[in-house]
Structures are given as C-alpha cells and as structure tokens.
Image (cartoon, rainbow, N blue to C red; front, side, top):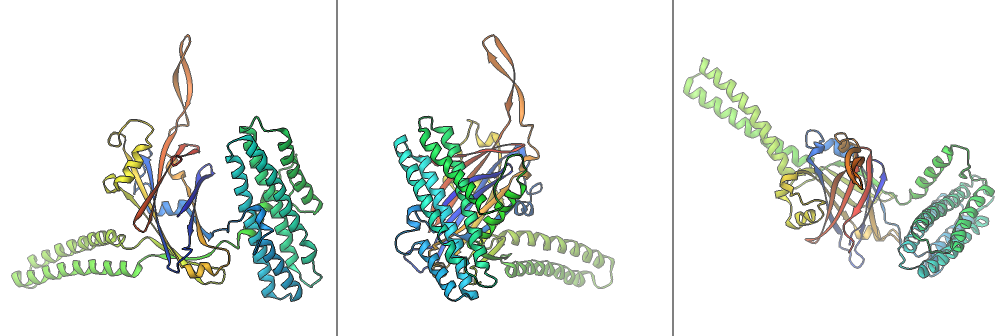
Length: 487
C-alpha cells in the first residue's frame, strides 16, 4: 500500500512524500500509478496558455530516495541485526584494515544509523502527540526520554573506537559530523514536541516539561563541550548555525538519495508519428500537383495557383497532424522517464511523469464524487467553474535489486510544488466586510482565501484508492492544508 504525507514546506510550496514499497514475498516487480488532480478556481486564470507544461515542471521539484527502514527507538541498540551492531562491525573492520572499501562501508553504516534514528525519533514524537489521555502521554514521554538517552550514549561510546591514529583518518570526522547531526536532530524533535504539548496539554505535569527541557539543554551543552559550531546564542544572527545544520542534513541523507537520469519519454515514437504526419501532408501536396498537371498541363497559371494552394494546405495538414499525433502519443508515453540507480549505479527502477489539463467529463465517477463531497459551499461545479490539472506519476521498482540493499524495502518520492504561479491573480488577502454587533453593524476586515482541492488517485492492480486534501491559500501563500481522509 502506498503511504503519503503532505505538509507545507514554506509559504509558497507544499510537499508530498510518497512511499512505494517493494513486494515483500515476490520477486515480481512492483508497479504503482499515482494521478494527482489539482482543482483550481476559474478566478485564478490558470490555463494552458498562462500556465504551460514547462511552467508546471519549473514549479515542481522531485527527489527520489530509499525508504528509511522502520525501527523502534528501543530496538536500535538491541536485538539481532540492530543498526548499532552493524555500525560496530563496520568500525571493527576499519580499525583492523583501514582501506577505502572499509571506510566507505563505515560511512554508509553511520549515515544509515542517523537516518534510522531520525525516523524512529519522529515516529516516537508523533506517537506521544496522538495518545488519547494524559496517563498514556506521560508513560510515553518517560520511555522516549530514556530511549533517546540510551541511543545517544551508545553512539557516543563509539568515539574511542573510531578515533584511531591513522594518517588521514577522515572516518573520525565522519563520526563527529554524525554525532553533531544526531544532537541537532534530538533538539529539533524536542522543540516540536514541547511546542505542541504546550498548546494542547494543560493537564500535563510540569515534571514532564522539565524533563524534556533538560534533554534539550543537555544536547546544547554537549555540542558546546565538543566545540561543534552549531550552538545558537542569543543576540546573534546565527546564520552559520542554520547553514551548518542544512549541510549536515544533506551529508547524512546522501546515503538515502538515489542517482537519477531523466530523459523525454517516447522520443523515437514521437518522431515517427511526426514523420507520418509530414508524409500525409506530402501525399496531399503531391496528389494535388499530379492532378493539376494532368488537368491543366505544365507551366500554366492555373497549375501554378494549384501548387501554391496545395503547399498552403500541406503546411497546415502537417501541423494539424503533429497536434493530433502528439495527443495520441501521450496515451502511451508520458513527458519524462527517469531511470533510478543505487549508489553503485545499478538500476533499481524507473518513474514516468506527465502533465496535462483535463475536463470534468473525462474524470472517473468516483473522483467526481470525492470532489463534490468536500465542497465548502452548495454552489454546483457548473455555476462555480474550475480548471483541473493532472500530474501522472508511474513508478516501477525492481524488487530483487531493492531487496539486495540490506534493510531497505522500498522507494520514497518527494514532490515539492511551488504555487506562486497560481497566486499572481489573487485578490488582496484581506477585504472589508460588515459584521453584526449588539448595536447594529460595523466595518471589519475578513481574510480572502482561495480553496485548491487536491485529489490523489492511487491505482494498483486496477484498484483505485482516493485521498483528498484542500489547500487554503491567499495571495501571501499557503495558510493551511485540510485533510479529508480521517474517519
């Protein structure tokens, strides 16, 4: 089953993360199709002329990486085949034989340990926030606090094992980067947890807030004691701290991101169709020339006029043929095909993507039904009007290749769409209205927003699964995203 997570990336961009699993019990390649329908109000004046296919792809960023293996925090350092054990083994191999191959394996294992730690920490925080009552929350906070300390201490103990007096021992630098990254990771997730708890939980004992705050302070003091340049101080811009954090994140996550090679899809087939269209036009022009010659003879004014007219129509027939076959071409091919390779340049899958405008009458009935269920007013689609953008995304995973990458069992695709092309024709974000008061009415300001509806259609083995979201947007950017899939 495909998993997705949608969130606001910044004021003008939203991000969707898709997780495509490899088939667990089969060597048959896994294929997935995701159709992303974006319903836009007519007032935005979005169409194929004002927002072309090229503009869409310029607004879209796509990243492909391996799906992070799932571990509980407590299982990261215990149990068979845990990430810590694999990391210790790689350090031992490097210390016994410090060659390039062992160093590369150590770098890979330490990055994977950090990625798994980040995923496990995030999942633990989300689990705490989703707890239904205070008793469960307090118990989960205790467990989270203890597990984070255990994992961090276990990783810190490896320092003496990798701090080896070999010439050019940049493996120790890699370890220090990972240690600093983990500390920042814990700090960031704790800030998020504290922020949301303080907003929601008035009954939670101050003991638990103090415990979490102490963990944040511990990590800050630890980075300071290690002379890591990522401690923020009051009264400074801390620009370098943000830059450092971003660089560390890219360094660690490089073990997950895959190599890609993107090309236009179906180029040869497209050129063959265009050649066929040119051939049809040539058949028409040659036919007219032969017929005119037989009827009017050579070197006559009538024959000359017939040739000119045939050339005019030949040009138009060729262009109309290109347009017709271009539409037919997209029934079989998408706009781009991206081959996906692992870090050793072995192909593990590919994805195809295509973009087009579609009309209501071409939509499946279940998609229309889903769209109509989440309308915010009783106005019908006929009187309200909207444009529909369709982004098609087909991905195929070579199961054998993905399974050979130890612990990884799928591919994650991250789509980031910038909506600045949709906001230029929006009204001011605030408008004056009249509100009723006890004494009558008065003027007030109200937010002027637009609703962009997003429907995801997952197609797996001819079965459709629909997900719906609504983006509440004004001219300044995205205000919030509403989820219409919760039961």
